[in-house]
Picture 1 (cartoon, rainbow, N blue to C red):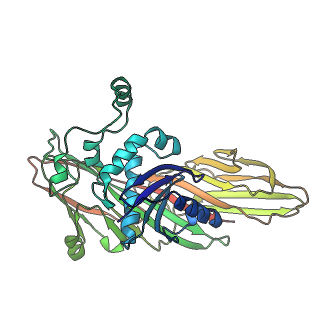
Picture 2: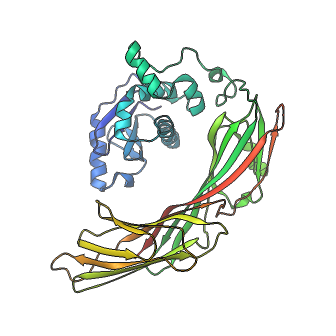
Picture 3: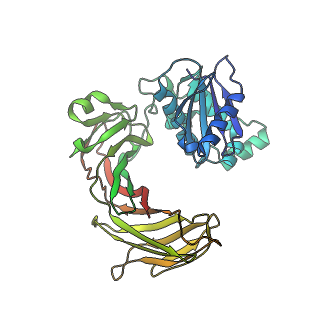
Length: 415
């Protein structure tokens, strides 16, 4: 049972406080938590579950905003963490993104959402589709009406039928003239390559995202041709676990609209689609930089939106970098960004130049880490393939669409 939820800014300010039970939690717990975050040097390095002298704390960090929950009783830790993730996802869905200004400008909606998502410390309604029927998302028309009428509430007058249904994630008897369902495989490749060019880590984090517009109460079955490669699977509450456990198929009644059906990991990949080869040599107060980027393992589809970034060390006074393809920019926070786009067929993109060290420093002692990003449409690098999607309890034959997308997650090359 959670007792309180706080939303903290990136400076430790309490932007929002929601007491959930009769036992009030003092804000001094946030001061204690922020002191722990400062002592670590980076709040993202804090453990998700922390034991303070008076409370157990659950915390997640999203876009610079810390979601902090407190309890004094024993409870499953994953329940607290998962609920905070749901809150962050719902707020992102409602507000379009997450930042301090959006939270403060829409704090009434945030409070109303928390009122419906948790009751007396226990999670209640967390499905975004149902919450949208209860609380209208913010828009210009609603804001103008609230100014004219003086009513700032976004609550609907009637309770959605799904809140008392056996299928609480789905609207009551939706109807569509054209039934259609779209399934997307969205994957991120996380890679760490050490300074010797040896791959330390290479794995895929993937999601199966579904956009469903189906009438009535359809029953769907989704199967993969190679489900044995999947690890750490997590499912939407609509998925029946026994069919997956016995046959590794997904059987479910989908929510209406867009939702994440499942997430997974595929570990120990052998290679990456691109390579990044940095070389840094320094003497006499300067450092020469050379970076080459190319295709290592052709996925059969175009690799686009390629960008390479690295943080200039604090000891660098100035940088003069050029490339034979794309554009190089030095941002205000001393981040060098090389935008490549697509790799041309007639040459290998390369960036080179010199870095001037501060006075009195002969050699560079802190070497930067290069981070790459890219996108590949129509390919899932994990090798996961959808075998078939069966639909039942529908009045007519629906349209089914399938897509795949792979993009870089944490793609790091150390120099």
